[in-house]
Image 1 (cartoon, rainbow, N blue to C red):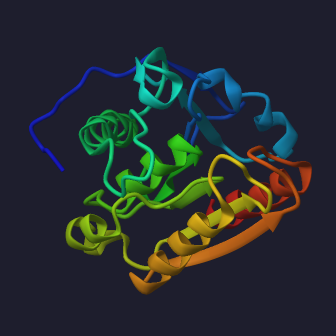
Image 2: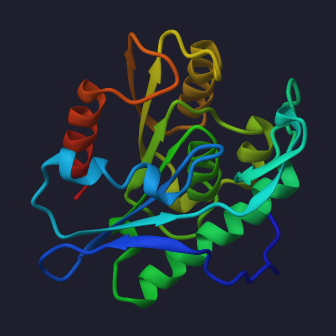
Length: 222
């Protein structure tokens, strides 16, 4: 991953707790959405924890699978390519790393910073967290997959070995087949991560039972 990229912070939404924050969740949306996509889930979690939620907006870029249309995307998705979009993914990783660094500067311990992401956002959350040089709280990976297993094996940091990762997926997901997610789960376990897996009878979406499980995961992490 390039280390000489120092991007300005992306546009984003921040939700502050009623008391000073002692933990941060950086939550990344999926293709074509924006930071508002998961904002309504925060009250549904029903958590009384001092968590700051940050929802970055992905940059607008051309997306090949949508005939080159411009939309918010963390990377240009290349069908049937194991490492397709890698340059975009590296840039997005640097942009999310900038948010983590800022939270640490604001006094949040790295071990109380959790990355969350849906679909493309989950790819970036995993890619960033496994390479971050300081221990993080964990990763919430929703309806997503691990990008570039070989590269991850070479570039992961010792700081986040055995990090707890929650993966959740729809059994009838037409966008990212559940088998791709299950393969990612097995690869993450092979690399030594603590993966908790949940699947639900749904498509490429989030359900209430999943939100309840996310709340339990956040409570355990924080």
